Image 1 (cartoon, rainbow, N blue to C red):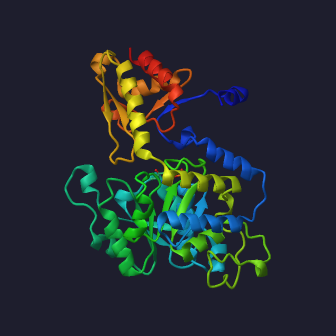
Image 2: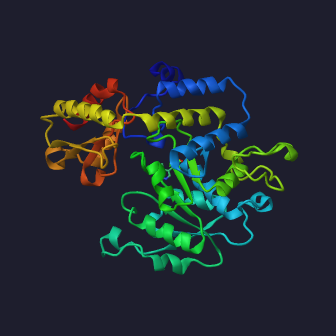
Length: 398
Ligand SMILES: *Cc1c(COP(=O)(O)O)cnc(C)c1O
């Protein structure tokens, strides 16, 4: 592995920052890599492969249908494209130009950098709500009437982003969507584990849900899952898969149980982010492993490694270590490194910058860097790198 990087002339990285996309996403199990290598040597009908993927995603999520995309972000673009064009081939062919309704209503507190993935399909965002809770200015969160007031003849969907802060809003948004007959798109990219979240948003009433394949599922980095209502997933499939086929020969019974569409569209807006056969196979194998993994045992093993690291960091001036359990028993613990800048002689941001300048560079979770806290996340750090990480931390902090 390190040989490969040496041949390419690229530095290896000590990744204690988790499944960050900019550090390559999840590290795959060798069984997943082996399945991908096998797929790489085969030809396969991509519609048949995505139809099998749909059956498996449906079984894992409880949704009617599913599609392997090239990531959660791509899934959001395809979800938006599906709600804009539905099964109208002419509308598909026009995207990202839209004739007719094009607004997706999204609470301001749910806006992330990935919201642009919705706009990429041609949608415009209609923002609602006020972030009194998040800003600390007050106690009120999102209320249904605010969402309803933004709905009109130009609305095609509602969108939400699932995380611990937005959790209370999701049933409300699903309920408003249901009442107005509008699809609800949920970005649940990083909400796994717990595994019950694979089914949770669908059960709650979400119409389309996206998950990253390259995070906790530990599939290929460039994969994701779009799960939900069959007609919309079918629309997404039509807008991503290659459509250079004889229209008369097209059927895809998994997506179109009542027969294929009357007219078959040309290549869609998602054609530029097609999922490869290797990626689809890799994601399916990883999803199966994820569904059957012993995550509690894995968390136990990680807690032990973190305990050893904390012990090895004892005595570093200005540093205190604390093992933080995951917020769910299926979520792995992390080691919080709390710096007292006066005693340590360095603050959190400077320490993170120093770590990234080492050879090999080391990366930690920086979400709380402003509070002078760095966290060690072991999702992508092989145990053989533990000692090197401790040495890097001692070097920067001592
Ligand atoms: C990671 C992430 C995405 C993007 O997922 P990809 O699979 O990398 O495309 C989207 N939304 C949220 C909230 C994420 O955390």
